[in-house]
Amino acid sequence: MKTILSEREKFVVQFMAASIYGIHENASNCAINSAVIKFAKARCPNLSFGDIDGLSDAILQEATKGAEVIRSKKTEMNN
Image 1 (cartoon, rainbow, N blue to C red):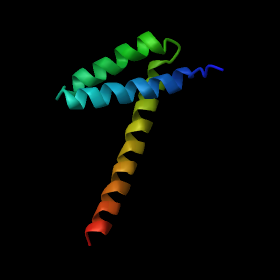
Image 2 (cartoon, rainbow, N blue to C red):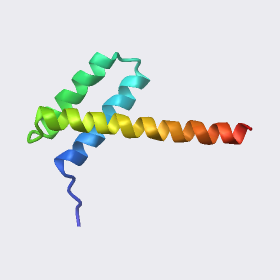
Image 3 (spheres, helix red, strand yellow):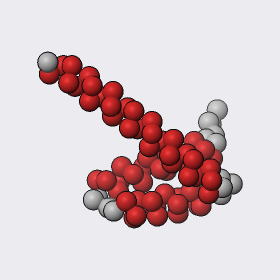
C-alpha cells in the first residue's frame, strides 16, 4: 500500500530539503525562504501563507531545541 503524505507533511519535507541544500550551497536566507515558498505553492497548494509561516516557525523552534540537546550531550561527553 502506498503511503500518501498530507500537505503539511510535504511542506516539512520541502522546508528541510530546501534548508539543507541551501546551507550546503551557501545560499542566503532570502534565497532559501524564496525556494521554500515556491515549493509550498507547487507541492502544497492548499496551505495558506499563515499555515506556511506557522509551520516554518514550529520547524525552526524544534530544530533549535534539537541542536541544544545535541550540544548539551556533546558537552557532557567532553567533560
